[in-house]
Length: 363
Image 1 (cartoon, rainbow, N blue to C red):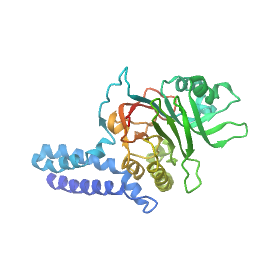
Image 2: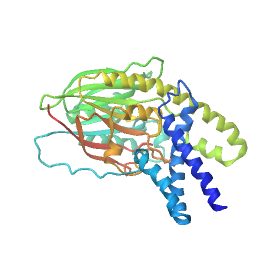
Image 3: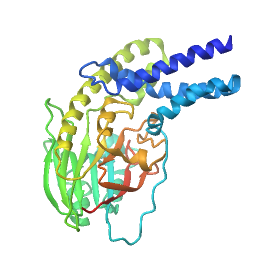
Image 4: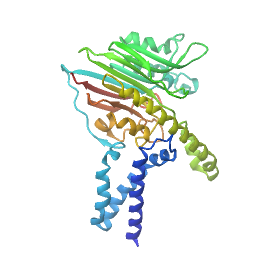
């Protein structure tokens, strides 16, 4: 009886796994249910792993099937759990090192409700970002207000630290405060711009070309793709009762669908722009999608992922109860990753910062 049950779940896990991987290649704007199937893929990976141990206990020879699937789809597991280990960053080198920080700063906690229990939080976060030693900073949910010294982020992170800056705003409010994306660089910025999407959105992708000391040029993208638009408390409320599950569950599903579709359009435009780049590419930011998604797969088809190549553990980047990795750094093959770390001890925002060091290989 137990063997029949295990056989059924083995067949289920296999079909689920294959379908989930296949759906990573299906644009949600063409067939939106594929987004939900791809999102469920971690469940198939866990079920197959569990079946491996159960078969080892019940009938070891049959464990070869789930083991084979794990080996065949190891790249999918590596997107969620890595034991890569990073190379040691040399103290002295003639190679061109690039130190990068990418971070969703949550408008530096400038809203009162974000710092009501910790009035010093905005200042501590701003100071930490400004004094970080990175050569390049890619900041999402950026906030600047020249009229209030603590939030004069262009000056504090840029001019005062010897960095050039490119800021692209999606909103400037009535008092002149700016909201958007920012890239700060200690290397000269020789070109800058925005990736244009087909549809109106407050989400953005910007880029700069920076001239390295060895005269090579690197293109750096900072992205903040369409939000999932889901609050943690909504998920909790939906789980608590049947009524909440029916009402909030439908609302969450509608917003997830909208996000899948919007990001699938956005990532296609982004990839077109990347493919046209005359320079090696570094892409940082808030993907707002899981590693099993069409969005992630589209970028991963052309670029390496820093967590997969140099991360350790699960690499969760959301500072909350949801164990997800939605912030990323991708890079061209011309770059070599030396170190990568999710700074989960830095808890100013609802996202953890990502820092990495790369070597730009000379021509």
